[in-house]
Length: 325
Image (cartoon, rainbow, N blue to C red; front, top):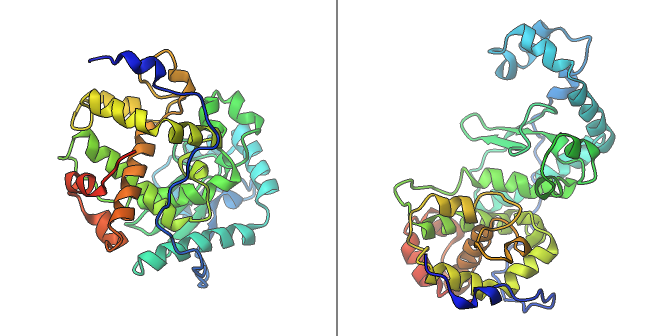
């Protein structure tokens, strides 16, 4: 790998007054869906000691039919899961407000994708991995939400569980809507495994962020990508240097899997292999792909959102984006 002598200046001092850029204007006056949600609070039954395992399996066979009774019995008594369930009830006792938030996101999705079926919603504390707090299955039209991962960054159990701070500091209630939009987007944006050049992954990730722009337009960029506002400003200030680094290191059309690990996967910082790496946020490649996709839509206003999302000619998208940070 060739190293540039100016890498030491790669990351300039943070300037909070970074210049703004005119972006595509997303619709913000969409009405929330009015139809009743198919709402299932699995946790309410799961942690109710008066409900037998047999009854639990009868009510929610899709969750428990294939799980041995003995395993269910032990998991239902897990002290941490039960404590988190109580804390979820305390924070999200008003499920009507929670339903309104979901209806709002579903309204935006249906605005752009009218055929999108409103999923069956299941709340289930203690069973979803923190890396996947929202799970959407288009095959069954089911959406499972682990509200235990949206209890706030100051929730002490996260630290006690050994979850890294760069992950749990974004476990805020306000992150639920972007997480919902992101997980549904994963089933809308096509992924062609044969396109293994790094630029294809950048644009794939960028497209999923674009759908967050469309589906949760009121959310800040920081909330959508899971950054602090200072990290967003760091990326804006260093945008040209990041892009130049990728170009000069011949990464855009590389296919090394380590590029995904370094620039796409969640991490406390991005591995540029410089002494200033720790000043950077992780997932800088996701952020850069987002800016390329924004540039494409800004410079090609005639392109319909869904046509853009379905277009897998990422080389052409990159070329036509006119991206010049």
